[in-house]
Amino acid sequence: MGRGLLIVDVQNDFCAGGSVPVPGGEEVARPLAELAHAVSAAGGAVFASRDWHPPKSHHFIGWGGRWNPHCVRGTPGAEFHPDLDLPDETVIVSKGMGPRAEGYSAFDGCDPSGKPFGRCLEERGVHELLIGGLATDLCVKESAMDARMRGLRVELLVDATRPVDAEEGERALRELETAGVKLVTTADAIQEIEETTNAPPEAHTEEGAHP
Ligand code: VGL
Image (tube, rainbow, N blue to C red):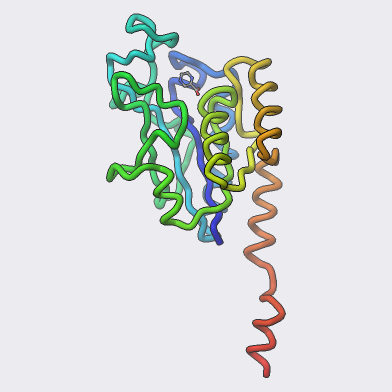
């Protein structure tokens, strides 16, 4: 049916106690996990992106960048938050892996075999992408903008995303709406998935079955 879910960077370093904590970041983990199971059960594709930086990254303070070191691959801060209970079929998308890669957009990342995220979506026939996670004004915004540029229908899960900066977060939502992104809640998304999954067969199918 072409539906996919992208969960952006729900990693310990972006949650309470992490090195670049996004206020309330950990609160998005449970609703996104619930939605991930609903999407997967309905035959949709689930992707979880992660920052997967080297220890020396030009993205970090001390190496020319603006951020405290975070999400260094192989460290506890780079792990997904423990409340993010993902379906087994989830495809992990790693980004920011080179020393000069900022990796804000999931479209700069790739799956474990090295396949670019955009190609993964094409192969799964995903035309409609639900997006939530961290942070609204950075990786979520960049990923959603790139998805729109590729012609995907995009729905942003407003209750399951949090900004680093509140004002920037509001600005990001307006920019995304202008770019054609629909703002929805995880409850709306789950309801829509249940309705389309349990919908009765189309009229012509009935006719075929009862000539
Ligand atoms: C992010 C800081 C550095 C984010 C990414 O999107 O949350 N924040 N890199």
